[in-house]
Image (tube, rainbow, N blue to C red; front, side):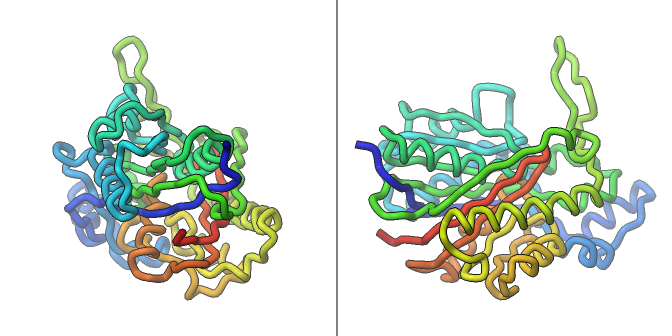
Length: 331
């Protein structure tokens, strides 16, 4: 029999060891004759530091597996009981096999369904939507949903406008079929008319050659407007679908891209600033890992408890965006 609902039963996260401050970046850029400063970065983004992988022992796959392991341990879940693994990532370690398949092997969940989702910064919301639908439809009972990125590998360290924004990390949740509502409403959206000239990375492998530009390109002002509009409207829609008011949200977890975007959307929704989770200052924009990392922080810090109404949302290239409203349930 298929379950009527799904709920998040545990969370986990993993960050690289190396903490890169704004001063560190300023010194690196200065070596190439590019001027920036801690104040310039903080006032425009709210970012003070971020984590970068070392490129050898730390990869998208190892971060994803570490976050997954913590989520499994946090929920007392045997990896052999996982029926589905979905990894949201834009920065896989290889074209294929999927990151999800590699994670499956590392955590000992061999045999379950495993695949990746690519919706850039909106990836975790897309993956959560997919897992929720699959659990509700059956026959799956438990899903591991992960957002994992190593954005430091695709930023141009000579482009001040983008290199200061991104960081690396992974976050994970265990989702379980439930008789009681957990995920109350979730929606995904996209508008492909906003192409790589707005936000994109055009690199590809073509007959053994790297073609296109292997670094992020972004029109910051356009992305800012699209992000604010998309996040605001999607939050309002899922609130209606869930039968709640955005102002009733106990914990607001937006995509951690830019503090100014986050604050503006919260204000438009009528959500008090103290209800918003902010990890952007220490982690930067970790793309698909952003929301699950912030969610795990909120759980570990005790800001989310049984019965909490939680709004999750993200926006990224595509343009793609989405929101989910969750009633936190301990059982």
